[in-house]
Image (cartoon, rainbow, N blue to C red):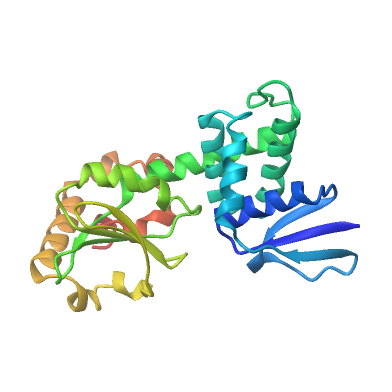
Amino acid sequence: MKTTLIYDGSFEGFLSSVFHVYEYNLDDVSIIKKENALVSLFGTEKVIDSDSHRAKRVWNGLSKKISTSGKRKLYKAFLSEILGIEDSMLHYIRYALSSSENVERDFSNRHILEIEKTVKKVNREKHRMDAFVRFRLTTDGIYFATIAPDFNVLPLNATHFKKRYADQNWLIYDLKRKYGIYYDLKNVKTVQLEISEAINTQKEAPNFFTLEEIQFQKLWGNYFKNSNIASRKNMRLHIKHIPKRYWKYLTEKNF
């Protein structure tokens, strides 16, 4: 009978679930987030509590079989939030731990291949966020930006923005997942906030951003509009490099 392990959606919770698989020697098992769990009529379900000690034991134990780069790929695959990715990760881990050789490049294994493909998608989204984030200065002196990426890449963007904007207080907020990363000139911290997408509308802008910032945004939008040469416009190429789903967060696209 199949066992479904239900966890809280955190990476620590996933690793705690992997620990449970090995602790009870489970064979036919699936790991799924609480928010995606459905009641099963033909199997058993077990809610797994996040346990930092157990999660750390699993993560450290993987170092014996998987390189640092390989572990990083597992984490990125987890951030994809693709339904069922936990099972592919579990198969990857089991295969790696049971093999006498490094299996990270064994793409004949469908789960390893799936992880590799997923990581490429996550990396692409991460780099797009590096390029497409647009900051605006709030009335309390914080440079603020919103995103809503296909994958949960915000943890991967922290280092890039910390290095690039080291002399500014900034906050990047994920509207889809309702959390952000905040830089206080020393450290990057994860913050939980409730911010409406209405913050991006021109109507609400005066309630959050400085007058100078609003004027600058309009100036930049007008410059972008007037500097384009209509006869040389290639929308197909433009959309290829800047997909339409990102346009609503680009200053130059909102004027």
